Length: 65
Image 1 (spheres, rainbow, N blue to C red):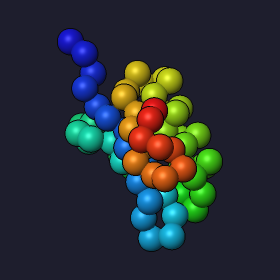
Image 2 (cartoon, one colour):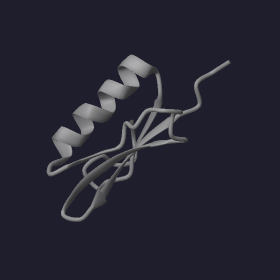
Image 3 (cartoon, one colour):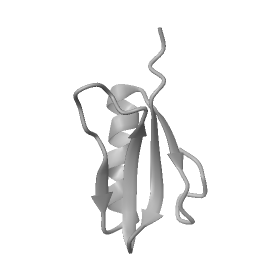
Image 4 (cartoon, helix red, strand yellow):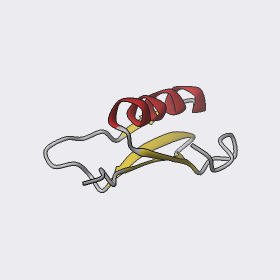
């Protein structure tokens, strides 16, 4: 069965939020970062190592993963 988690980057509180939905049981991957490159690096790591879809909703990311 496919792992249907999605990693989403959004702008929030003067920085950037990375959220995983649905939240995996017993684990928290949500993080906040002051810069887009930091948030993007973390989110891309989750995409690479977990195989989760990535959606970047920031103006910097242009909506792509």
